[in-house]
Image 1 (cartoon, rainbow, N blue to C red):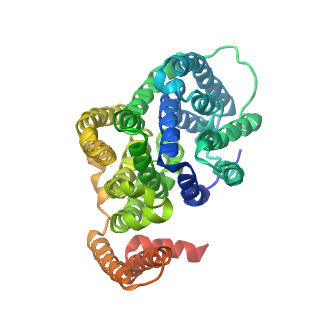
Image 2: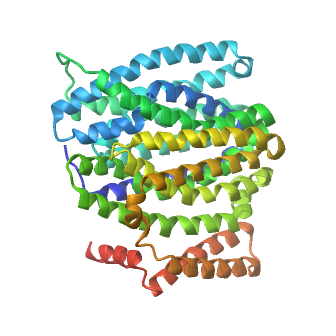
Image 3: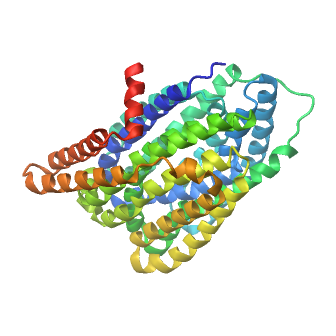
Length: 479
């Protein structure tokens, strides 16, 4: 099994991230206009409920499975046995979860009224569990993951424009959304024989996985409280229209976040391998460069989203979603916060086997978020949900920074704050003036303003000889 370089994995994951960006960028404006805020709100509500049951069945396997596989990737026997043990636990729990889910669909009035939608969405539970995506990430098969994902996205792209024609097609849209999960799960199962031995072992040790998986499960549940439950509460307390506004803003924010976390996605398995093999210098070097990447890439995205939120919403989802503008401005701050907390929490605490502190941070954040949602949603609707989620994310980051305070210099010591502030300030002033001066269509003005904002920002960093930018350019020249 070939383990490629971190640079190659990052390039592949960046390609995947770009596809994740382009797919909703092209399809969601069309879908949002055809289905209306009510239709997209129904699908978002169903998906939030299904996500909870998927979390129950997964039982924390997403990150634990990556770490467990990364630690034994050099020993195929141990890897095969580990995968079978974890999968056995997941399948057992999945059967129980499906029974609970179907009971809810048939007997809870709010779910039964959209029974077809929830039955379609529920297929996501099965293929998320049996798809063992965590194995492929654990052994760093990012080329395979990227190519497979792009193929299914292209298929889904054509399905959306072929079958989504009226507001009544929201159930079809739900099916197309989970199509990539179903397809990926099938292909992953078929390809499993190339990664592990498909054979029965004399003795399995399921017990050793239960405790760490339980901790990761608690973490996942807590995270869901300020992500999926926020949507569910908004739906119950304010209705599908407010959910539609919030979901549109959250989707746009998510695309921005994925750009920043694309690097972190490939680090968990590699950093787990470094820790397991006592490669501390390599661990520190990767962390230092990752934080520089996060600061340089996330801050301009935050500033741009705040300045041009209205234009982004009008162009991407239409004037019917004007209620998404302020939620997007609030949520844009999360791009920077999550960029750092993804590094400190997922990429540092987990490889260091300090996931209990990650658990503490997200549980505390979930409590804060629930309290704020109850207070703010009745008064502010989608804006209240956005504020609650942003504050919850900030609390996670502050706790994790305190826990990792001995890494403070490695994390923050090499950031050139003055150069970043100057570059952001000049780029903002230039793009605002340009936006006010241009007299073209909304789309043309937005594209020109966006292009000039980021060109000005990176050009200023280059002129001021920001070290990370120079090192990236040197790497490009060498390659």
